[in-house]
Amino acid sequence: MGQIANEIASEKVHKLLLKQSIPAAIGILVMSINMIVDTIFVGQWIGVLAIAAITVVLPIGFLISSIGMAIGIGGSSVISLALGANEVEKAKRVFGNQISLTTIAAFILVLLCFLLETHVLQLFGANGEILVPAIPYFRIVIAGVPFLAYAMMGNPIIRALGKPKYAMVALILPAISNIILDILFIKVFNWGMFGAGLATSLSYAVCGIFILGFLLSPKSSLRIGFHCLKLKKKIVAEITSLGSITLVRQASVSILTIVLNYSLFKYGNESSIAIFGIINRLMMFIFFPVLGIVQGFLPIAGYNYGAELYKRVKEVLFTGIKYATVLCIITFIAIYFLNYEMTAVFTTDTTLLQQTPNAILICFFATPFIGFQLIGAAYFQAVGKAKPALVLTLLRQSIFLIPFVIVLPMFFGLDGIWYSFPISDMLAAIVTFFFLKKETQKLVV
Image (cartoon, rainbow, N blue to C red; front, side, top):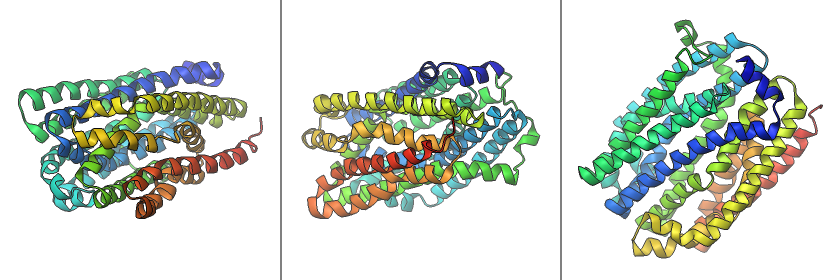
């Protein structure tokens, strides 16, 4: 642990940021390729309704597993700060409490989903003909969600421990297994949506088991005893204080999904939901290098802030913004020239090929501003300032976007939904700028 701490505290910031970010970006890339390939397979081998069904079901699974993500990111911030202050025992107890919280929350929510299956699916937009293919996919995917919750809880901790390569492998393994199983279950065995769901669920299990296995092994500096699993009020409060940012963000994503799917069906049809399904997959794939920078940024900023090395905190902040913005500009250029080709990868359906490229261009119009906003929001989370982090995180996905998705279609129809995305991105970036400017002026170097 000493060598890792020395690197985070003293190595050149641009080199350290790349060292942390590249494995995270590769892991996110593979995971996003996994999701894209999953959508391509069901789109090409099952049909347009299958894409719509996945678009409805996956946000439900991610909402449940986001409990694990919230506990993981909140706890990893506490762990980074504790390790920066040389409080190793506290870091271990935080990890133990994270395991207990994730276990309790995930299994309760999964049980509720099984008991309220049809109501949950309809709430998230399984309207019209979408419900039929959504049900078998939902049942098997939800069964594997607890493993996904453990994976999403543990991955940020591995990065906080300065082991980005292990975090990368944790994302690569389930991606590879899912792609192989998709081909086997959908194409070879012809199991349809059940096969797609089974492949996804088993890939969640691979990821969750690998991450927990590593963190509980002798290779981990956070190897714990059973006493660490006992919930402590103070530790739970710290985890939930910072983790609530991620949880509220994911909850807002779920609310946005409900509003979006309702509006898409109202102003369009089942195909409109499938179009957004393609755009949603592209969002994660296209932004993988930027999300890698964000993930690499978090433990470095958190550790150095905890160690009161404020000059390095400023340096990593500005370096992260610079790298993220350059990547976003390159991404926008690629979208501008290749939007039709991106669509054609997913489907041969004439309607989708006609409507999706224009929707992609509109939705990604403000891409150059997104890197700044993501790094800015991540900064406040990294340094343990929950309230501003929460506000900035909610700007794009809740405070701005949801009202626009409701109002703009009244005037512009289906296109109004697509316009909501760039308008929200630009407004969020402006607000983030003022928050960040005020905060960095307070740092005493």
